[in-house]
Image 1 (cartoon, rainbow, N blue to C red):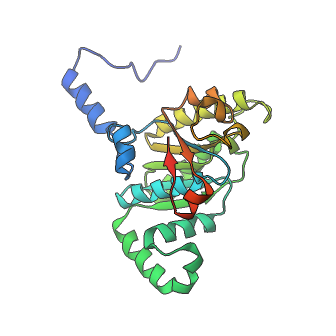
Image 2: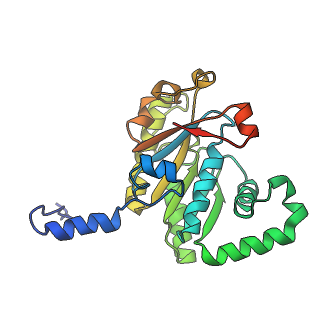
Image 3: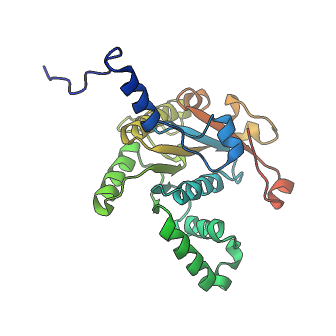
Length: 253
């Protein structure tokens, strides 16, 4: 019989210490978007599973990149793992967000971009972008994070995964066609990873074809459906139209 290292919480032992520990370790961290912070009563908590859901081309990656920039500018160390876009494309989007220069004009203003990025980088936390092929598992993510933290001596404060649907469960032989079971395992394993690492964790999910003509979304519009909803702490639907995109506007539900 193995002995338990952690016996849990002695509820009556030290009420003040217990509450102060909760306040200090799990207090909300602002997303950088005031309107979203109000809905979240202050921001995201460490160890939570936060999902931005949107259709193809709706801006899921843009939201993850933008929120990563917000956290990095607060001095937090951000790790952005992409299973779809290249590291160069993600990095150029960050260039554009930090400098206010459109991605099409980055190379025309390369000196200006370099200066601005270096200046902002001196006051910001780390922003690491890593590409992994789709089909990886939460254990692969865990392994990379441990290697990154050992080699850089930096703790990952914010983990962004682009995106959940492209991961497979740890060890479980689940058909990729069985979305409900696959996404259920992956969602639970990712949430456990976020709690284990005590990080702010944000990812994205794909909306299905039924959401194409919809203005308001519910669980039936998310690929995998309830399996993600039941596990996630916060789920946000991203709505945009062609006219809205041309004006650079997106709506969160």
